[in-house]
Image (tube, rainbow, N blue to C red; front, side, top):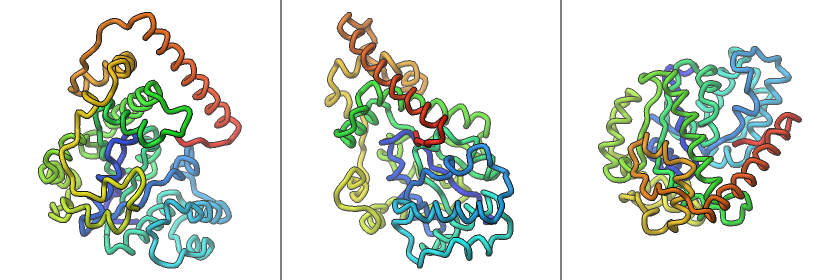
Amino acid sequence: MSADPPIFVIGAPRSGTTLLRVMLSSHPRIYVPPESDFIPRLYLGRAKTVMGRDRAVRDVRAILGNRRFLREWRDAVPDPEAFVAALAELTPAALLDALYRAYATQHGSARWGDKSPIHTHYVPLLAGIFPSAQFVHLIRDGRDAALSTLAAYPDRFYVDVYFAAQSWQRRVRSARRAGVALGPARYTELRYEDLTADPEEALRRLCLFLDEDYAPAMCEHHKLARELLRPQGRHAPVRDPVHPNSGAWRSRMPLCDQRLFHAVAADLLVDLGYDAAERAPLSPAERARVAGLATKYHVLEGGRRILQSFGVFAPH
């Protein structure tokens, strides 16, 4: 097993986790691969299980079939049977550590991390697999995250302002609850607004938490991003130097959407120290809109849970 504890970057979608992934990967000792969704799918309820050889081979084969995760893998893809044969023990921790460590080594790094938004709901699982792991929760004003979500997924019928508000608050609350249980040595929160306003100061504080020396290359993340990320798509802005980026919702989010978002998540915004204006009672038309979108959301969520109960895993 690696001597350095793994780093898990968590956060609601469109909260800047890809930016932070590339910043961390710009550190000479750290590498964070593209996001994955396979750890909960493979190991939920099995964090400490000792696997049989056949099961371990199936798990490795499934992981190595994830093209998104392997996008930055530089060496030949290993043979699953040979990979498993080289493991000192057949546990999720040993398997995952060997896989991520091999990934990091290809990029000249000694310490590995993971960045996957679905992991906001699975912090206890990850902490159970890796008892020394550290978690960095990147939090962004939910209204800016909602604007970014709507722009990034215009073709997904289930993505609307209500969905964005519920998804943001559920993920943030889930991660924060788990963080309280972990304690300050293993869990920290970083604000996206701080990271973009003064990246060096924010990254210096983060390096203190991780017990790593600060590396100036972290503030030049765009150099690595241009190697790793496509010039088109929803992550393309990470290829540019960072600049202050907060509060766009004030001018770009329609007032009716602001009020809807606040009806769902104003309490959390206030708890986090964000301004939650426009909290006046909703009009009858606004209440009807909230009710309609809430019905849509809960029907879809109920359907997803039914599929999960039949073994169809839908990461969320």
